[in-house]
Amino acid sequence: MASFIPAALLWIVTVWRTPAAWRVPAKRALWVAFFALSIAMTIRPDGVSSALDSWLGIHNVATLCKHLAGITAAYAVLTFVYDVAHEQATSLRGSRPRITIPLAAGVGLTLLFFAAPQPGEATDLLTDFADDWRIAVYGVIWSGYLGTALVSATRLCWRWGRLPEAGLLGRGLRITGMGTALGIVYAGHRVLALALRYFGLTPVSPRTDENISSAFLFGALVFILAGSTLPVVRRLHQWGRAHLALTQLYPLWLELTSAVPSVRLDPPRSRRADALLFRHTRGRLYRRGIEIRDAILDLGDHASPALRSEAARYVAEKGLIGAQAEIYAEACWIASAKEARENGDARAGEHTAPASGGKDLHSEVEALRHLATAYESALVREFSSARSSG
Picture 1 (cartoon, rainbow, N blue to C red):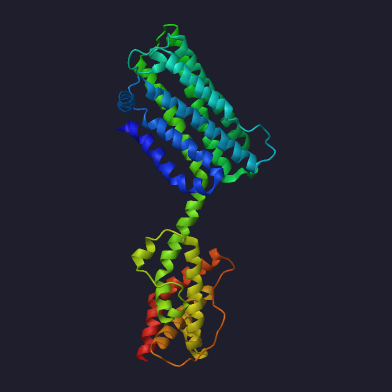
Picture 2: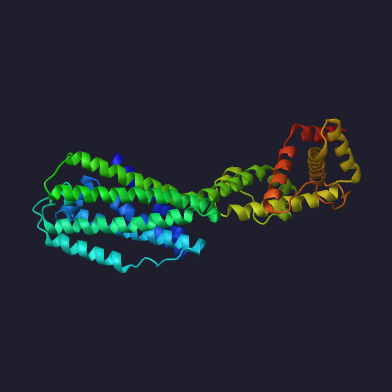
């Protein structure tokens, strides 16, 4: 069961990256890499490869498919690293990877595979039939191309990833470089195992050799996955903060826009439905802030200068000072003005600048979050209750 975990993770990443790959051509190389790796790791377990061989009626054809997918993945990773490095650091010169080389390698593997006699299923094609020169050349081509591509990718990853201006993307490339370096070790191990088996030497059992090979391969996949997704972490963090702010502002937004429904662009959803809507988070947050501010401006017409002064005195009596006092005083008169509007009281105030606000979306959201916290506080409820009973 554990052998299917890498394939499952790779398919999850592949599906997740599919929309972006279709929208942005520059992201397709990495998507191709994950797609090819997903195929290779899916057919890697013995049960799956045997079933595929039986279904197609060709001994060991699953191994050929796996190796062709590996060549595709290696070329795609190299292309991705090249594109990222040369887009961000034009000082790094070099020729773009040519597709003719992996195509020639793939054709060579296919011809050698079908030319070599294979009387039965092999546990490992490269070692079980290593005494056949065609399989030996097959192994050299496969491991040689894989190793060469990974050496180039590792060199690019480390050259660009160490530049001071590389930032988080550079850190991701360095981690990817660790994965491609492990891939080089994997390829070297396969070449060594192939050479030893060709000369009839078996220093370790085939099972042990397979476990060592799997460890190198899985380690390389983990680092490549981590490195390629690291630059997304910051965007996910920013999205998470925006979505959290969106849900935190919901009660204040619903309260105020219920009193001033004309400021709403769309009808309100339930709080749960709103929290479970994950699309267009930044645009919705921007709109929510505007609608809250528009509602406050409208409610300001129901907040007389006397009410504002009373709110300021009230929070001062509670021991609040400075910016905190201004925010809580604003929340107090907003709550009272909302009640006055809902009761149909005549307009008694005027438009004034808000006590808090920001110059950009981030600072404005922070100001509104402070206001929302104050609006829901016991202090504001006590102020509203005192005015209502008075």
